[in-house]
Image 1 (cartoon, rainbow, N blue to C red):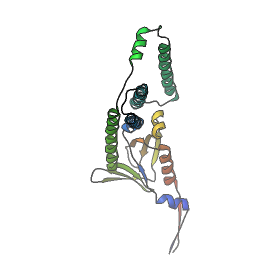
Image 2: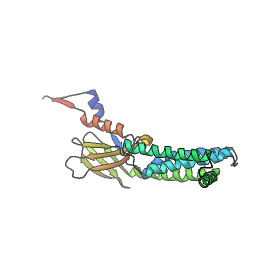
Image 3: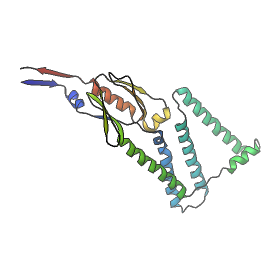
Image 4: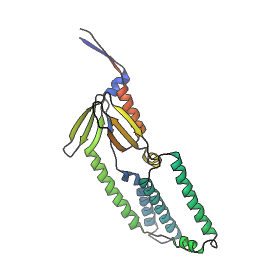
Length: 233
């Protein structure tokens, strides 16, 4: 006869599976995607009429897109980098305001700023949103064929159209978490997760894992669960 005594928490964790997915950086363009949808809907509601508000909408969309591209192009890993970025933004806004309200300072620069009067109709915004939507659908489909699964006793790598499977030992798994970009973390709570399976020389590096703090905590709880088994004949 065999009796097993295990804590409720350990029993719950032992049956749990944690899925880890590495996403491409294009996912961080979702603010531009939402801005394009909002701008497209607004332009449809006003009949694509060119007004002062429609020009402001265009400027807002271009600003969101520009900031999004900055996030994709550069990493802001430290507070100093973040401070430098905001300082540059403040300088640009300050200079723009200075030249806008004091035309005599730089006549040429003022003319250039006044000429910035972009306009786009609903077709443009909705086409941009449609392209991004198609890319996101492709990303969502592709990650179904390449993801990691953490179990209490093993680490599984599912990949390929035919669901090829690699198995690694999980009990002695070591985890490193890195948040290299403040803005990417703010957008999707994402970061880099590095897994070091036991008896494996190479580490598993997963970029842009969503909600990385929660994932790391769940894995730590799962692998740290202790089960006590008492056997008697």
